[in-house]
Image 1 (cartoon, rainbow, N blue to C red):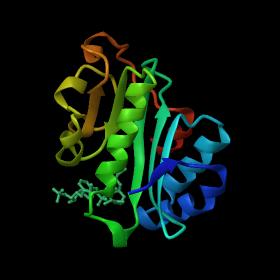
Image 2 (cartoon, protein in one colour):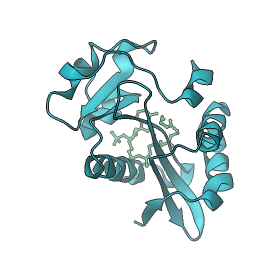
Image 3 (cartoon, rainbow, N blue to C red):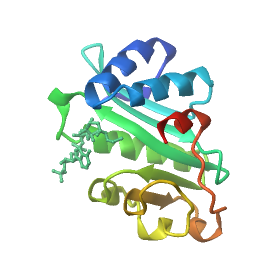
Length: 162
Ligand SMILES: CC(C)(COP(=O)(O)OP(=O)(O)OC[C@H]1O[C@@H](n2cnc3c(N)ncnc32)[C@H](O)[C@@H]1OP(=O)(O)O)[C@@H](O)C(=O)NCCC(=O)NCCS
């Protein structure tokens, strides 16, 4: 399935997809704010018949350094449970590895993200306002979870969500 980096002209379709996929417009507003901030290191879309039906964002954390935050992720309802979400997450992880990022954090259901190697246990020492049972790390550098700064701060655009 064709995945590609998101482009400026995808913006409206991405916002619509996010607004349809989540209960509130918080995620759509977040992505607008991230793009306004001009920092968008890994942003992937999937297209079918010219329409964006999958989106996955990873944004640079303010802390720890050289780490990414995964999410939001959305797949159009008609396309769900076909592996597209997993394909986008794996592609995002591969790109993060290629670009030398040290770790990826995610806030989400461990039953889903565990399959990609994310771990609640390894994230236990990080200081976060988020629920500990859902806060996870994927280490891209050996032992990163033991050596990274413990303060967790997502990109500024996320401040409006907490
Ligand atoms: C989460 C989402 C991106 C998954 O996309 P997808 O293409 O259906 O994903 P996959 O086909 O790779 O995986 C499907 C699996 O994800 C599970 N799943 C779907 N939404 C989930 C959620 N919010 N939390 C945990 N697991 C979820 C499904 O039950 C299914 O599980 P199984 O493999 O054990 O049967 C999609 O369901 C979606 O857009 N949901 C609405 C937005 C959202 O909640 N995003 C995630 C939070 S950022």
